[in-house]
Length: 422
Image 1 (cartoon, rainbow, N blue to C red):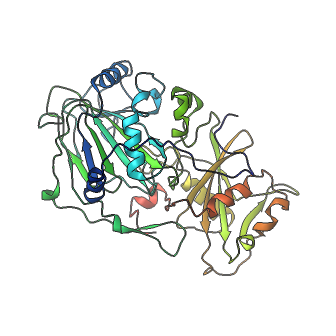
Image 2: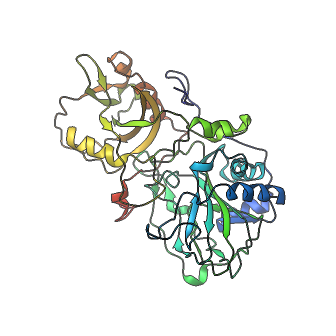
Image 3: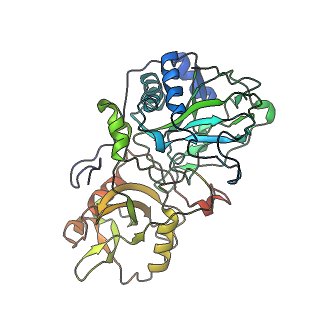
């Protein structure tokens, strides 16, 4: 197995990329006030030409977004994406590790950054626009981090014909995010801006738009006879992992990056995620006295509750890596516990693959019933508890790490109703 996961028992440090700052104080202040800034002509013509060369080699991209699945093949009118399938193309990967983008992103997030989404868009002639929305989403690997931003690089002018991208300055309202009674941060539902609040920042070929995760934006359709392309990548602070877990890049994707930039990918492995497990914690005053639920996996072996992963298909697109639905099904069936949310802890070796571990803190308000055949084990006794895999100690250490900004991860089905309701 080849994986970036830290060996069990060693001190874990979130890894990412930081480059020297390039923004002035006024630009940083504008980003914090408005939720976005535009760096004019930040991406050179040589880089753009190289990207277009890579795009030409990779049609029809990864398919349409949201349009009917029986639409004619590319380049019929639609919104197409190129993501993981061509990350390794040498002419395309450079936009993910572009020094200007990484320097600006790490400066605005005030932290080393990880790439959470690599996406090139192509809105072909006649392709529809997008209604007003924001991209913090508690069910998506690319949207459930508590500290991330969008970087957008147009490959053409986003004018009245190709379709402007509109933003609503100040609509990110960072005061909606606050600490609550539970370990993850709380996020209040947003207020949708009025139509008159949206402005056209006048994006032109080679500009760089940096946009807060909570900023409302929308886009017009492509009324021209030209392709409306662009790079729409997302970067998270390394200490703010997605609540659902990361999209798992493979080792070939990591190898495509410059060796100095490999930490741009928080996780990468050729082993698939085969199981998902829950670190269910009963908190105590002393960390040593925290209790963790263990299930009997063999005659004398114990492991965290959970089981095989399964794909949820309640909402289309972008959710590879969210295995919360499968985990909640296992926990409810086997332990008769229904948790409202979970939060990603890490990916660990298990059998012939990886297991994606999530966590949840019990509130102490539940009915005091037995969880047999599972049992609670004190944190101080975990190393001698007969653990089947051994990563449980490290998983608990990560969950308790106060440096990590955590959010609440939900299933797709929950979020069809209200992603802020739990």
